[in-house]
Length: 108
Image 1 (cartoon, rainbow, N blue to C red):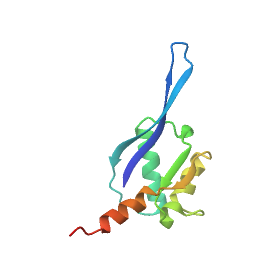
Image 2: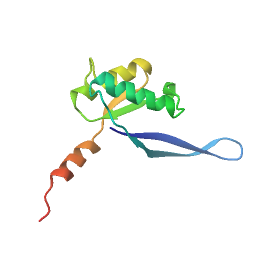
Image 3: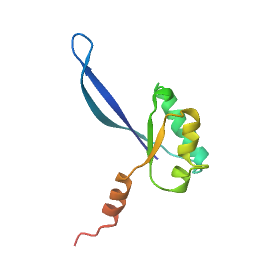
Image 4: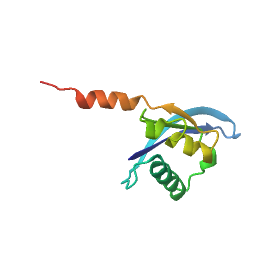
């Protein structure tokens, strides 16, 4: 599993007032998973968030591919993470689709 976080950087002036917002994205790690169930994925994600010293309470979004184990509305990773952070809305991660297309493209 690869883990990437997106976050907002708020630039402030000398009066501590926001003057600019930037959205950043950072690769954190590749993880080896022994359990490929929704519980296995979500437990590993939460473990990594905690070990990185990040506050799960500030999580506002989560994006995964459309596989049932990730996106399932009843027992997927997104609903298990949402149990820890109700404000973390799930959005389908469309870049995954582009990656699949590029991997299957043959250049001759």
